[in-house]
Amino acid sequence: MLLDMFLRQHYPFVFTKYVPFKIGIYEDILIENPKIDPVLLSRYLHHHTNKFMYLRTVAYHPTRYDLHGNPVELLTLLARVHAIAKYKERLESIINLLDKKAANILVEAAKNKKSLKNS
Image 1 (tube, rainbow, N blue to C red):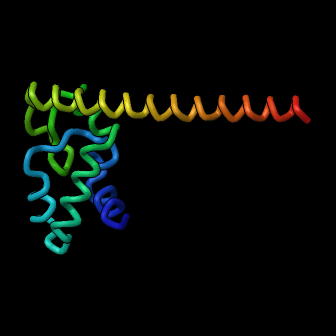
Image 2 (tube, rainbow, N blue to C red):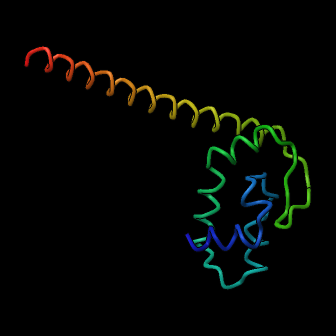
């Protein structure tokens, strides 16, 4: 949580807008901030780059950015296709979860209606 706040404060463009990171952003962060725990940073970046918002941006935004918001390179087609596939997978799992919740709500409502009739 503290790392998230630190990165959002120091590098707001890339960590609040979920723009695609340049290749090597992990090393750039460690060079500028040598006191950051590399393992914690690795886990954080893995989590961040698998978020729905990040995947969507990578899928539909052609440019990678450095820590300071400068465009540095175009995303490869392979990177965009990979992001689209993961984005679609996340979207499908969200839809499935919502479908299950809706089904449970309907089952509970039917049970409550039935118990009210029997009262």
